Length: 498
Image (cartoon, rainbow, N blue to C red):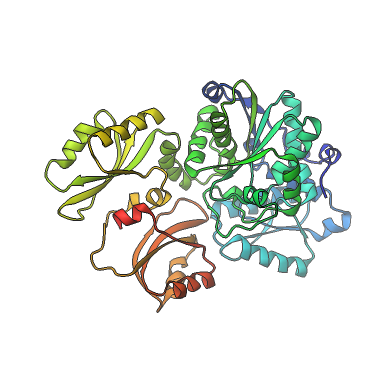
């Protein structure tokens, strides 16, 4: 069932949510030669748009349903939206959260009076437990996106935009399960079909884009975890139908582009949005530059600002690459005295080195991992052409996530004794005993030959792990039984440095 304009107009969101401001972004407008406006949903009481849909759903319940209370499963913004909405209406609320949820998020939900139950290492496990509790308690499920009342509640953002800026040309919307873009698109298109609605997903978590391409809902096997606010493997059937009928395009952006967008929003507002909250501005930069769009009124949705402080270091590292202000290279040098000095004088010249990693490999040559500060895309082209003219063998690592997530933090170099090594990237739950449980599951299968982990302040982390094995099938069955997402890695970076 699709939500109608009438249902959006009648949505009961303003008992608890604010009409968020539409702020003109001076710097982005100048750079893109368009009028860029930021829809500040990060200023809502729970710092996210999720409050709108959650409250509209709960407020629509019958008196008998309200007596039963509500239940939801979430590790983030939806959990806080449901908890605050239930508190406002004096209802009992239970929120099921994965055990990996950071304490700051758990405490935020508890502060609104909700009961928090920690279960499982991921959303799927928490959701299954939630279903069992629903059967046991009779609580009413408040779905994060696949519900007509939730969609209508999110659609009030579209209503506000059309009232605040009637001559809007483009609206860029972050996409996870699809509730936000479904609500906005259906309302806006019903009033003005000429407004272009562009959805933005992470390149490594594009369930809606893939579903539209296939013409049916598809479930992704693996998803990126950086923009956790939109990290869903499967979109809703209600949202999919609406998006298919009303949305003009779904585009994707990289992690680096998202990080650069977080910095962009900070420079415009002095506020720090979460990765999902920066998707729209990242998409606007990419889409307008690619399609040479000028002189248009463009609205981007700042959907949320629930960023863990620990994640900022990761964001800072990736921001420069995402904005073309830094490039990462693997460069081959002869293993002899003066080689590095010659490289710096001939190639680096007036550029700043942002990173330098080196480990003796052979007596004939060395592969250095170097980061260089640049002024932009043209400067990078000149830098690469200079290396070519001076005959330095090099590989641009700027878009190699394995290099940026792992290799740049490793200095051990190649092993001379390892045999039949197979390298994987494994998604690891951030909880006590996770490593012990992982090793216990692997007991007796293969010898671990490499292990690198670095926390980035998320609910889960990425581990680069190597095994000496000739039985990859047996090893991967262990991964599957443990419920961990894994990816075999044959990166250029691992071949050079590991």
